[in-house]
Image (cartoon, rainbow, N blue to C red; front, top):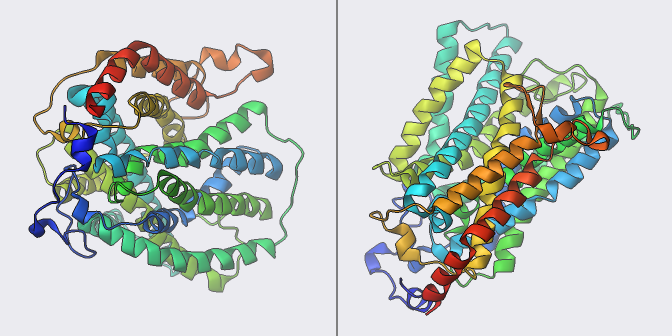
Length: 481
């Protein structure tokens, strides 16, 4: 194996490589290693990339969504406060990118090996596409509502045209790549902060009701917490290294950690609290698939808000679409990064149209949020256990080797055990499909609870540590020589 010292002392890339990291130029790098000369990002850029993505109407919607479970404002606020602490997981999942210089599901080859990693990479690709479908669907639903405001009811073929146009616009930023996304999302975040301030004033000057008495059951509260964790800190961990990989290897790990944690966590917390407040203004919302906009808002604000909401939804979907593209490469698809983005765009457009005409958006979305934790929690636990057992050192060239093969079966066993543990303590009773794990009702005082995120993460990490610990430590010793 290539030693850590030799990797760090490697000769700089040829001059022709320099300058490839540039905005509004199609990024040619996929899952290959980023040369040191192209690592032009700074922690402030990582902060604003996440802030620009998460200053988003989706997170306003999530605060409103959990309130619809029957929670009082106090219960919703507690779920939001606790749930947003988990953005620390995104910070941890961004530390490996600068060291390796590649994406999350190349680094995931360290615990799972190349062929074994295809299993979890497929889970991630499916997850990213699911979030993309959510975003494009909300864009289309919002656009259709805007048409209806001017007396236009679109036919089925016209709706399909809207889906195609939305998907085509969504393609642009991830097609150009990392540098373009970093630049654009930074400036969009400034605009979104102004919109947030106006939205906050309208909510705070409305007749909201602050009730801190418990209205919903313990089971409903833990389900709300899982949703916040799923769409927030834990739900972004599989994206973290895709964006931190352009940071120089000398970047302080603390600065990387806080840039990702606070860049995503601050806007998420503010918007979800605002969404929970908006839910107390009125139970009646505008008919835009429940974006959570109270009908007491003035008419002058409605159209600008919805237009900005569409732009915001495109912005957050950029993160998912870029990551799904590089995940397809990690799966072994022989395609360039920008080509993978096109493939995913076509898939998302087709599935969005199917959901629009035949699906049940609320049930499908809630089930998606709850069930992705089943694979994601153990994967994150295994990744972190591997990272610390190998003393934060990786054989970069071996991970990025396109001819690499092999399966670490004990990692897949740990992943499977973690997924079983998550299913044992899940409560997806009102999702589709409906399922309640046996541990959810086993303890009377915790009846109906959902701790799938905790059991999956802990069991996955501990099982991997027990089964693979000595092997991983030997690899670390060889890498450090």
